[in-house]
Image (cartoon, rainbow, N blue to C red):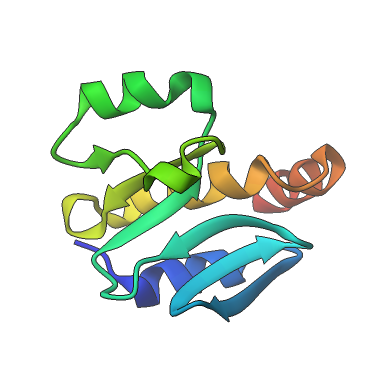
Length: 115
């Protein structure tokens, strides 16, 4: 089980990430593009995810993943219950969401630095 502190630690380690409190939600963004958001009760996290793959992800694990609020359905976005994932899965979700919003060269430099 992971929590908001784990999300914060992982996100802040990624290049160009900024943390902001916007309308009672902790959000992580690169420039003006938000790629993660923690719910006010810190029970769930919204994250950037390809819209065309969202239904498949939710259908594959409906106890873990769920739809964004109706006003966010037009975006590349999905949500996850933090209690339903472990640290390894959280890291994958955070990094992949971040990769969707940074320039490819930034993501490549980050990946190269991990090796």
